[in-house]
Image (cartoon, rainbow, N blue to C red):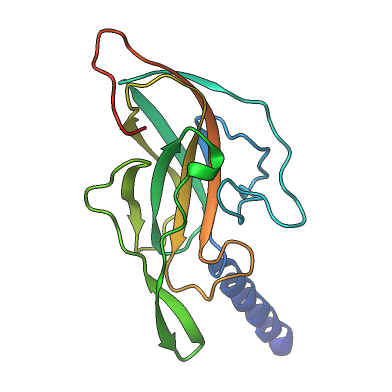
Length: 197
């Protein structure tokens, strides 16, 4: 019986270690452009999720937004990992920014990501950086409102990425998870147009 309990404890420890090595999140709002499972997969590949084996099934979801207005962005962090999030907006998928380059450190378990530089004053295409910084064990819902530029943009890509610290990296996506939503933005004629988008 003691052996069985020890074996069970070891299995539980290994399971928790494996889970903590892979953070996950689901994009709840606006609606994701691909179908996500209960953990938010597939989400490894830049710029908008999927994996080499599974590019993701398109949902066809499009969110209509008025330029210059606030947009609710909500996620659910399904598996914890320290790090932060960034939100970007681009007219084309290949105009979304590259993942921020990680700063590495050596640990007793080998090289791990130490931190990711945060843009204190982000500019297009980044809307906000350093969001939902997470250095304590936390999962669950997170949400914020972001101001959408006052532009006309049919089929714009809103990208939400999670940068993971204390992570060994993986072949698909490095240290980052990715989700996107498709927005149809109609400028508010009563407000000045935003340049640079």
